[in-house]
Length: 379
Image (cartoon, rainbow, N blue to C red; front, side):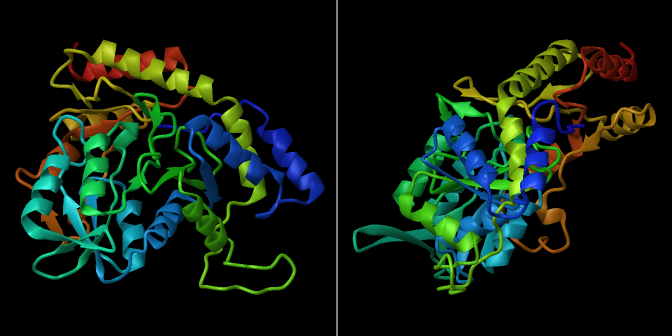
């Protein structure tokens, strides 16, 4: 589906960690990896952590979210988004997605805020609370589904107007830009993931992005157990042992050295699939704003014959998977408030299939995938 591309200095840098004994959360590669992400994304600060979920959890802490708050998230996302919110104890409100982009429906969100919340100014800053419960809207956590873009400009405007921190789940979006600005750099924080199937991988790993100096300092502090002294074991608050380890960061440094070629190949794969599948059966593609440049991480398309095609491809040893189950279809999240008009999330879930998209997928193998899909549709 999307396996790591290990073709650079990964072995050399990992061996350096092993040879020098710097394999834990201290070492030169953690800093180097952070610098590589900063330079690529254009963000002021990048703080490495153990995975994307941890980055989202810490970001909620940094935003001051508590169990008395409401956090808004899309109904169609990978479960880690909601799990991170659950750790904070906050109440979750789910918003449906747009039919064409598969991203959080910002108009639906704005309508809900206009009709169900009240905004007051405290010390000159807007604070928005739900009218019925009196709970503060603690954060909005949009997701860049498959590396595509939400209506981020409108979200930033909403965040500013209502005084609601924007925490971008950009875990799938390394390499995605809008008008030259990288995903995850628009709000209070953004979070990247380097899980095994992401566009680059460190096995497990994440990165918190922010342009706020105070937030960056606190992020690094609390992810390293809030230790205040390099010698004495003195900690000034409840922290997390969430710092990325040097040996994994070493892999990340090597991955970033080859990132441009990886990204280029992902886009080539996307272009060929779209060209070959255009007009085939009832296939529909995810749509992206023309002002955006998505990373084309995992090729996914819609078809009403999703289950049949899924079984056909997997039976022919072409690994394919369905999309994420909508959050309100999971037992632990089934009772959450869900703002929707037509339940687009469930419709997309039932029709979407992801097919092989590894950056080291050969053109020959990609054509095998294409041939098998066309064979299914009798073309």
